[in-house]
Amino acid sequence: MTANKNKWSRRRFLKASGTAGLGALMAPVNRLAAAAETPTRVPTRPFGKTGVDVSILSLGGMFNIASNQVMMKKALDWGVTYWDTADCYQRGSEKGIGKYFKKYPQDRRKVFLVSKSDARDPDGMTDLLDRSLKRMNTDHVDLYFVHAVYGIDELDDSTRAWAAKAKAAGKIRFFGFSTHSNMEKCLLEGAKLGWIDGIMMTYNFRLMHTVGMKRAVDACVKAGIGLTAMKTQGGGPVRTDTDAEFEMAGRFLEKGFTDAQAKLMAVWQNPDIASICSQMPNMTILMANVAAALNRTDLSARDTDLLQRYARETHSDYCAGCTGICESAVGKGVPIGDVMRYLMYCRDYGDRDYAVAQFNTIPENIRRRMAGLDYSPAEKRCPRKMAIGRLMREAVEDFS
Ligand code: SF4
Image (cartoon, rainbow, N blue to C red; front, side, top):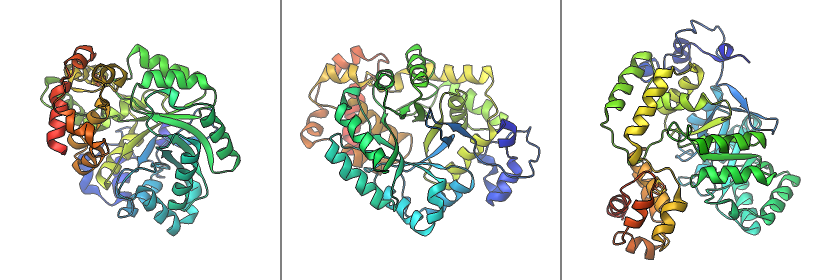
């Protein structure tokens, strides 16, 4: 399908969605697309060597799906056919998907369904997978991830054997892992394994241009691994008063899209990324992201430069997930990278409840001593010179 066939006029999109009042939030789906007569859907891309094409926008399932069933219906209508969840997502994410498939069983075959396991041992993974299948009213998931790996040594021969067995049993079609820590290393080493079908990793306008990340993505592409980007907004405890950000917001709005949409478009400009998994907890965000996916006007060189300038100005506010560096400097089991992510959920996503719930999964004895630790060795090593001590103390204060 050509890009033009995928484009859908903004007017038509708004009319079909019945929400013309949201026009101000939407990308003008390309001034080129005068009036495609037939509404088209979010485009697809091949997912590695799986032979499956997935929608370039994936519905992140970390919201109250049970109470937002209309989101699922509309997502499918607009071609967002890649749905992502995990056994540990709260607010009944998997159960909400199960509720949907119970009502619309015919839609199961339209969806590329992904779930994830917090367990690492084969028995634990089997239990969690079986529970996920039951909750979601389905007999298989299309892709199953080991969730949030910090290093590739969390996968071994027993993982490989488990994946082969689960595939043979028809419970999963493809297998891989997700990571928001030490991503470059995880990708490079994952590419060497030879039995990984897909990886979901933190990847955004801040990280995608580094030599290390480019090399890691190339290795995965050569290995035929499908890649899904997440955390594409590049947020966190990032200050919001930089000159570049003001300039960026003005310029992008004049061109007809928001900076949030521009950050998605920046990632889609890399054809090696099959899909972006985005948390879309309400219709406004879903529509804005769908509009950005339908738009696909390439960012100009000046737009990209502006994003890069903004990234440089906020370099020391963004945690890049290289937890192997700071956590080993502090020790004591403090999950610095995780806490940075919880700050992002709270400050960037505005989801304080989820941030607090995640923070409370840290063992109590670690939480208790976190505020009083000396983080200066970690701050010295941090390539972004983040104010780790201050941020850890703010997290303890905000979330305790
Ligand atoms: S705090 Fe610094 S060293 Fe630690 S993960 Fe974040 S960017 Fe890397």
